[in-house]
Length: 163
Image: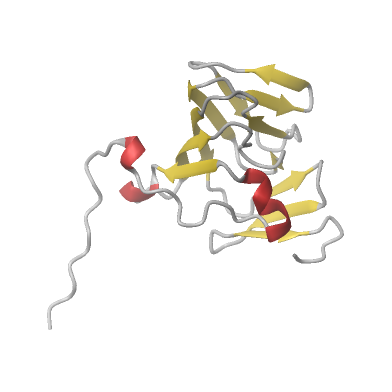
């Protein structure tokens, strides 16, 4: 019996047509509702990219990109395409508009996220590497995350108790 055919990655695709993540949040249930209104479309996955990830992310009015967090090993970058999100960092709030970008160096400890305080959708690209052994801290919440060797986020309370 012949081996099953392996699907070839596309040569190109329209970003807005990329399938959305099957599961929009990996946060524990007690936190997942806080990112309701966020829709992520992974853009690197259809091409089989494994060293970094790219998401086309849409925030409905009132939605946030993530809980405010800081990565230990993963650099992050965002580029605003549509709308006017507010970037919240340790320094405070910074309004963004299309064409603006922001970067977050791994290990800086500067926690960040975007919030859509407007009445229009916000669309942005987010780029991050997939460094093994990464972790994230959430200064506003009783939450710590570790990126395991299988490529999944594992969450605990700050005292190490699992969710």
